[in-house]
Image 1 (cartoon, one colour):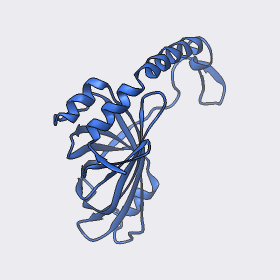
Image 2 (cartoon, one colour; image 1 turned 90 degrees about the vertical axis):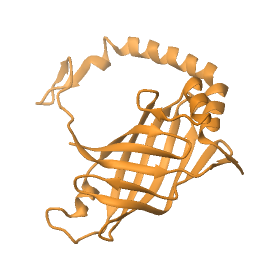
Image 3 (tube, one colour; image 1 turned 60 degrees about the vertical axis):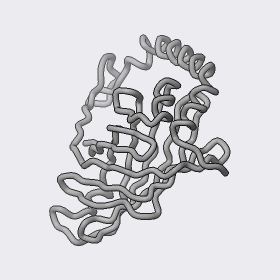
Length: 208
């Protein structure tokens, strides 16, 4: 096991699998074209009947909060990169707290060039409640962006695809309308705001 920077790791991954990534993108484009006039354009109507065209339901989001996590130097273990999260904060309209141990990400590169997040972190709210946050996610790095990150630059949402899907677990019963128990019953999505060698910032949204 050795210590490495997240930028250096992403650069190594992007460089080593670039040919396969290009091939996969060609395959995906071909697959997209093959379904564009078939299953990909068929949906279910409100009555359950097959119908051609667009979606039959809509997705709405509600801002949950902004999470900022510190990142320690990563540990490369085989093909994975383990990033310990020593601290951080989450702030939003209904939640305010800090990240406490244990908290880490077990990042895993995929054959197509993307990266899968595997994160578990613990939030201690300002009033002493504990919330477990678990999320997977997808990063699509490029060599150019990874080079910039390894040189100490701050990466933003416009630089790369970086989305997460957090879930929450808590036993808090201290609230009525603002009971953290509602977190057990929602699916959230998160989008990277900024990423650097020292930390990451996400905006989190509840999906309705």
